[in-house]
Image (tube, rainbow, N blue to C red; front, side, top):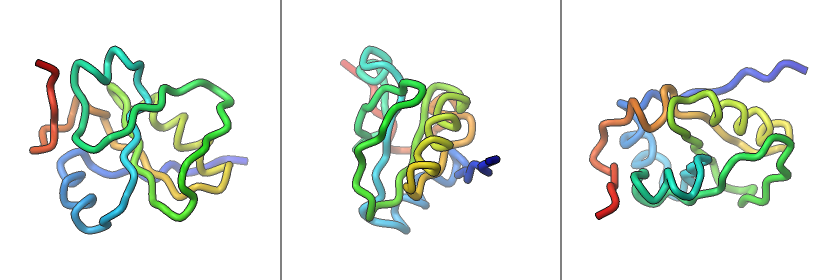
Length: 104
């Protein structure tokens, strides 16, 4: 079964999150990468192929990684498991929004 991956532009991510309050933002990078920088309010759940996701089913989920490939794989699995999820095109590398957090 082929699954089309819904995408959100990194330039429009802040607007998207503001428009859909309660959306879950999931960073699928390693814990170390997350600690260096992440999008404010994101939860860090590192991606593992074949993972059974345990996420709130009633929430829309926005997923990002470093450049977009891993988040697309994670979203593909989430959709197959019945979640409403989309990937940030280009990942955190392309995100220049006001909610970017860097570690001290």
